[in-house]
Each structure stands twice: as C-alpha cells, then as structure tokens.
Length: 332
Ligand SMILES: Cc1cc2nc3c(=O)[nH]c(=O)nc-3n(C[C@H](O)[C@H](O)[C@H](O)COP(=O)(O)O)c2cc1C
Image (tube, rainbow, N blue to C red):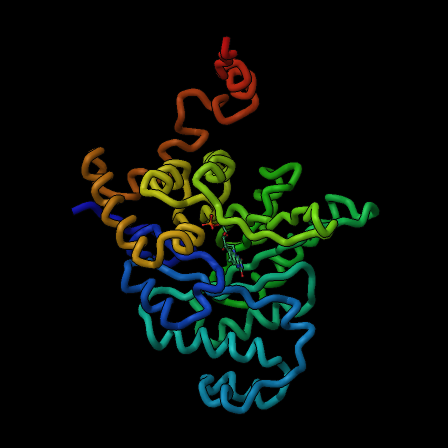
C-alpha cells in the first residue's frame, strides 16, 4: 500500500489533497463530506477585510453561546462584527465535527486588523492560518517596492502575533518572484500558497458595462504554478502549496514532482462534486503503484529545478525552443 502522507505547515497530513478556500467550505456539512471523501485538510472560506471593516461591530447573541470561553469574553467586549463572529463560530464547530486540520483564511489588501483577527482565528481553534493578499494596485504613484514591503510587513506582523503556522497566498504578478518569495521566507512564514487566481472583469458589449465573471480553472493553469514551485522549492524553507488548475491525478503528481507539499483543489470540486476527492485519492494510489513509487514523499521535488537534467527547460531558454516547436499547416 503506497504511503500518501505529507507534511504541510508542520502538520502531518494523511495525503496531499487539501481543499482550498471557497464558499464550499462555508458549510459545516460540506466540510464533513470533504473529510469523509478523504481530504487531508480544509481551508475555510475567507473572512474578508471588507466584512471586518464595514459590518457593524458586535456579535449576535445566538452565536456567542457557541464560542469557546476565551472568545465569549471577546464577544462580550463587542469588538468584532457579526460576520467575524459567525466565522469564528464556524471554525469552532468544524473543529468539533472533524479530525482533519482546519485552516482559517483572511482575505484583504491592507489593514491593521489582520493580526487581531489572526489571533481570534487561532483562539477559535484553527490549526493554521492562510493570508490571502488580494491586492490590485491601480494608483500610478505606488511602486512595486511599496507593494512588496506591504506584503513583508503583513507577513511579519501576523507571524509574530499568532503561534499557529501561517501561510501566505500570493499573486503571480511580482516582477521578481524568486526574490519576493525569499524575502517572505525570511519573515519566518511557514507556507507559500501559489498562486491566487484573480477574477478578471469582462466587457458587456450590449450594455457597455463591466461584467464580473467567475470562470472555474482548467488544468492548463497549473503550468505557471509548476514552474514556480520547481524554482522556489530549491531555496525556500516555507512549505509550498499549489492552488490553481489541480483537477486530475496527474495534476497532483506534477505538483508533488515540482516540490509542493500539498495540492489544493476548488474548481475541480465545483465541477465534479465533493466525492471527486475520493476518486483522486484512489487514482493517486494507483498511479504510485503503477509507476513503482512507494510514497508521495519520493515524488516531492523530483522535478525541481535542482533535480532536472536541463534546468533551462524551466527558464528562458525554453522560450525559444517553444516558439519554434509549433507546426503550421495551411489548408490548400
Ligand atoms: C467560487 C470561488 C470562491 C473562492 N473564494 C475564495 C476565498 O474566499 N478566499 C481565497 O483565498 N480563495 C478563494 N477562491 C480561490 C480558491 O481558493 C483557489 O485558490 C482558486 O480557485 C484556484 O484553485 P482551483 O483551480 O482549484 O479552483 C475562490 C475560488 C472560487 C472558484
């Protein structure tokens, strides 16, 4: 029997499939079904900075009873809002109901509240915390250096405010990704989750309005992540998680080969249902057996930049080869 175990953020996981953050993990019943299907851990849907900042402060009385003692005291102080209250309550209930690790998620751009909410999420019982910096700077006077510094300050601040492991979910759009990842690594952050998918607005040509679209991913989006996991896994201490484009058994195998500790899934569950997790696990076992690998750990990093015979295949040199590789046949 193949050994599927991995470690992520200092946690020993029974396999590398982690459900990433989305409204699917907002429902306690779904979380239970994810555990039953074999998910190794679940990232809860995010508590959004906008919710923290804009909602009225206070927690509804019917939720306060569900909170552990440490949080009831805070709830009594009226310092956090209803959304945050129900979020903390979800963490607490999820921890009561399932045995797999529950990772809380904070999603925002810039706020002094991250550290406070990180502590509350820790107190509610989360095993780890994921920070999703969903930040799109449009002001021309703000520089890349400032954005990078903002990420580093945030990582340092939250890392030093909680004792649970902290991962940061990154955008793929840093101009010097390797440097940024290295700097983040030095903050002591425990995990890098690569990469955020930014939802791109479209134009409605009938109404001349901007329409928001939320398209699910496909496996082709994995390639960007594979390249960077293969590069970053050579030098960062933080664990790497891949999110974006993980749909099949082969996708999970590729994530491991690139050096990721876990492969995260969301779109695949929207498309195929939660039971898809058990199919992926059965397929992963079969793949390992057929390809004579005894464990997932044997795969991890096998195709990282250091371990492949031709590193230029992941770098620019491959660009020229790729451009010349396409056949073109014009119909006569
Ligand atoms: C409907 C939907 C809602 C999402 N909500 C969140 C969220 O609240 N916080 C977050 O960090 N990521 C969120 N994500 C992003 C996913 O966690 C994941 O990173 C992304 O979808 C890429 O993975 P996938 O290709 O497996 O879907 C959401 C994705 C979808 C499809």
